[in-house]
Length: 318
Image (tube, rainbow, N blue to C red; front, top):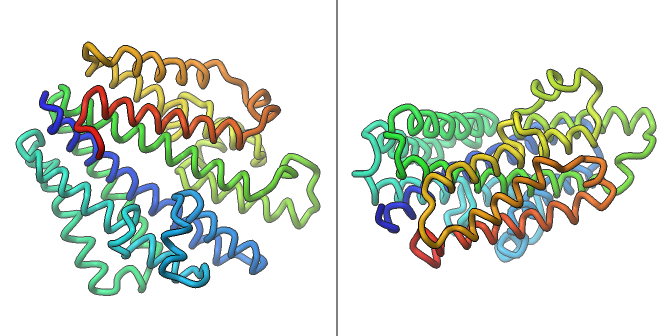
């Protein structure tokens, strides 16, 4: 396959996944902002979104203070922000348009109609009227895009590069979400809590689980009250949890093997090593050495993997 074609397919999927993850983060923050909480706690939630995306400097270049309206506007509609939902959906559509011949008609039309519809919704004020419904729509369009791709495309390199982009982006986003949300709670979140704290904690951890569609999964797997260490275990180490780091890396390794070329052996080795550490890791060991340090290192390694994939298969310097 031509590296340019592979590049467009890979980034089409990464941007679609990024739009979905941004919608998930904003939605859960919007929902929890409606719960009773202190002004500082509400503020830290919105600041956390900028931290997850590493966009604090870009945000403060345009805004003086962090407000819910400012963050939502910046992360949804601001076309100068490359990680905003509108920017991600535009980039996904442009990458799809460049390789229409490598996509099925259904895959292309899904991307194109998503782009046309999101513009219509934002122009008509649909986002402001009901942010929750808008975020659900973005998630649904991402699910639809992924399902149509998997359900209609030939299982060849076009599909494998598309899947590679999806799961590398998902690993990155889930790690950022877990890191920032756990970090915001401080090192005391495993200690004894007062009754008021426990009530807040339930909503906090429930919100994190719901942001990655894992609330029902948690209940099914653990059948217990929500505990931080189990949330961490589910989102980092569970192979059967679709948005966990373990599952995402498993898919990255599997799709890398299917597109392997003469120069990708070292990239495969590094991805395999990272997967093995997730496969045989234990949550108590990770927490003992520090979850933040673990996830920071994980993100560095995932970003390095992304760079190596670009060098081995794609058009460099995207």
